[in-house]
Image (tube, rainbow over all chains, first blue to last red; front, side, top):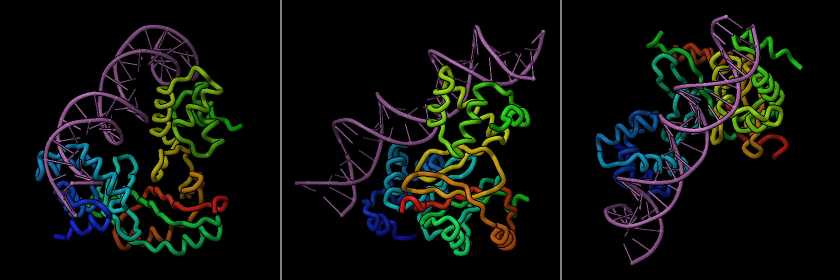
Length: 133
Length: 133
DNA sequence: CTCTGTGCAAAGCGTTTGCAAACGA
DNA sequence: TCGTTTGCAAACGCTTTGCACAGAG
């Protein structure tokens, strides 16, 4: 198990038991909605309130420890922030997976054709995953 | 001015004056939030209710006449559905613009490496536009 | 004429806030 | 100890719903 205490402190957040449980679940699941997270945290920490989940999600996102992935036609999922990457969303099973794609040539085009400096990418490719087809 | 009556009927929606005004504004602006749309429609049609805006946005999206663009850190904007394209979001002025990018090679990679068939792309590149830098 | 769309008010639902007590550093 | 976090309940804001009437086809 990773040192979530250290990771939280690195992002200027106190390591409370509630936050440690949240981190563990998000890291294990990879991507999770607020609802599902609340449900899963409650199993390990049954006094937690939904307000605490929201407050912590917000401060973790603000401190760039978590990243929100806005998904078409469904609720946002949250992931632990990592290097830039893209997402695949299966419309059948709703799974979200990370993929690495080389964007350098596209971003060169954007810079050249639109004189626009890209510093964030929110890229979701939807379709059908290998298990569902 | 385009024939919005025809476009609406093509998508199995009746051409009401409220919808015609909505279409004209969305088409002219390119991308617009619900709030801004309501505000602008009211100028031309002051009896319209927000509930009507919502009902129409929803039926237009359901019938694939409109497309919702989920934008990081701000409210969704709506655009008239067109061929697949990407979006640039300026973090400074919040403008959203359409761009064409050739995704064929990336999608070939996705298909080859992940055995995943892409049929929808939600791609937003954020940064600073030429006017804001 | 029929069925869909509109406007209003109320309800619904996800998210945020204020506050006192508990807790981490 | 001091500032942050928690849990609760209330408030909030956006979105949807039910219904009677109006309007498009």
